[in-house]
Image 1 (cartoon, rainbow, N blue to C red):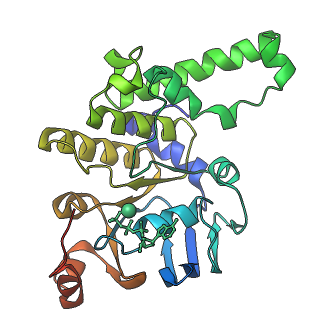
Image 2 (tube, rainbow, N blue to C red; image 1 turned 30 degrees about the vertical axis):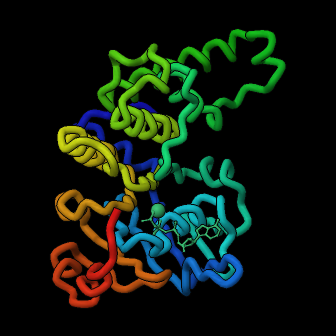
Length: 271
Ligand SMILES: Nc1ncnc2c1ncn2[C@@H]1O[C@H](COP(=O)(O)OP(=O)(O)OP(=O)(O)O)[C@@H](O)[C@H]1O
Ligand SMILES: [Mg+2]
């Protein structure tokens, strides 16, 4: 997938047709710790949904269930009509759910371009012999993937960093690189785990703008975020987790003034 202009973004939506996410009564336990308790929610195709909640609420655990890193103890997850239960992370990525990580995962010695290309490997259909012997078909595929990578690198504002080692980038830039790596995989749904945590206020503005532009490409976005202002500006719907339970969900203004939500945040130290 290449970034589209605003004029053609409606066309790109077609790749996400019917890509509703449904989480049905998901429970996840680690021994005695119940990280998620009977969570049911749905994310409409092309939505921009936020998930908030105090530390330890189960937000990242939910993402890990959605992407195959954790297996729920019970319940079911359906995306675009496909049941995801039991699928491994690469299979789920290939179905169109891509993510970034709370603790950034980059290949520090590889360049920005190589890191972004690593997100495209699921799309490369050539077999191993074609790759090893550099067949014309594979070279064409590789060239077009590189072009896509460069377009996404430019889209996230890192064109001048393309050949730098990812480990040398400032933290906020690495976060943007992770978004490019997810987007080259042509997702219908992008999961962002605290995209603005730990970055400067200038970077936060840039990330907020980037998330809005990604969404404008017709991609559904679910973002875990502690920054209330960012959530209120971007999200059309907010889910609140607390102690592994879904406390409430609804439009940002309604959730913000919900007494249960205010109580959940009071007396707890935020990061
Ligand atoms: N692999 C694991 N093994 C054991 N317990 C885990 C594991 N992963 C998460 N937990 C526990 O599940 C609960 C929810 O953790 P999770 O990381 O999902 O919270 P979170 O809402 O993302 O918090 P934060 O805002 O701090 O990132 C916590 O009690 C955590 O210790
Ligand atoms: Mg987390």
